[in-house]
Length: 366
Ligand SMILES: Cc1cc2nc3c(=O)[nH]c(=O)nc-3n(C[C@H](O)[C@H](O)[C@H](O)COP(=O)(O)OP(=O)(O)OC[C@H]3O[C@@H](n4cnc5c(N)ncnc54)[C@H](O)[C@@H]3O)c2cc1C
Image 1 (spheres, rainbow, N blue to C red):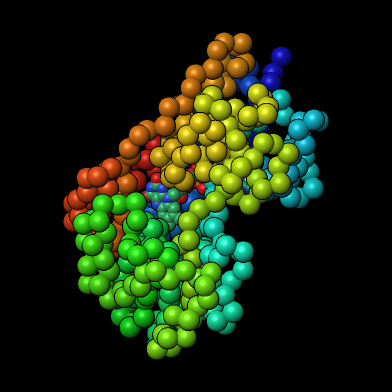
Image 2: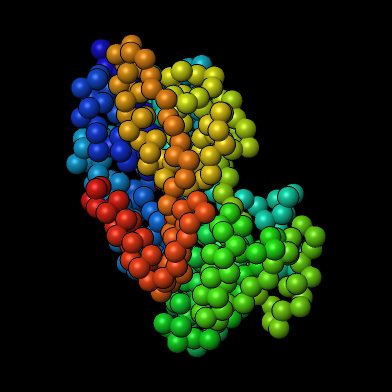
């Protein structure tokens, strides 16, 4: 008898399952994937913003599904009925499942504790760094303004890796287009990249200054936005890079949840339901709070595959052991900052290494 396996979201771990669809079929699964037709790779977010072709920064999930003979449904996932084991889709249809896995990623955290935007932001346009495909629209917007010879006042909110990447690459894009856009960054912390060594943060700060980006720390938006009034001109565009939270579509699921997402055990199974798995940014490992980074999903993929097969065969499931330290490289447009625990390295070589790692990752699925 076949077991209906529904995969929701084509995030990093599910890409691995797609590639190993034959193994799942041999174990007795019939697979349906619910996901948009493209996967936008966050490792290439900065490249997308600074002008790389869209196809270089994304994967065609529709063709990948055809190649691996997986049924693909593009209507977004909307809700879940656990008792009757149905996934409800935004187009009103539903799918029955025996086993379910969720890999729907994350959205941007609201910039203020109450979730409200700031009145002083007035008529500025808002851009969120996730979903990643929004950055394609932002790039086009900067391009269109340049064609009208209009220079923009842009403020990036957030001094973590994604805020720093956005500011550097908006400045780099403006320079390439020959427009004197004013790019600023503000952060609630005293310094950039609070999780990185201080010397690395100082190095990143010098790179931003070289690209013409001014940044200010200790500016918590919750306390108001007086800094905006002090700017020489009102912001046209505000880019929110205020951290990641589990995707909004998991917020009301009838599963055990916490602020980090769907609570999962080390076997990647939901705390409350053995037949429901969750991975990547939408999942919250109970024993160990994980940072929201793509590498977790990449490393969870093989464990998820093994555990789905083991579940079907009645064998024991294995545990996911998160990596203690992982390499991350911040794309600063024409240079890069590699971070590994307390070690760091800044320079063009770091950026070349990032390009190599990211291109190799996407190549696996092309
Ligand atoms: C600007 C930026 C740069 C980053 N750079 C890096 C980096 O270099 N390295 C790194 O490790 N991390 C990076 N991150 C963090 C990274 O984005 C996430 O940690 C990572 O994408 C999480 O992977 P995931 O597989 O959980 O989800 P995702 O990669 O977000 O994939 C989830 C998928 O689910 C789909 N989905 C969402 N909602 C639904 C729905 N309702 N129905 C169906 N499908 C849905 C989405 O379309 C998406 O394809 C970056 C983040 C940002 C914002």
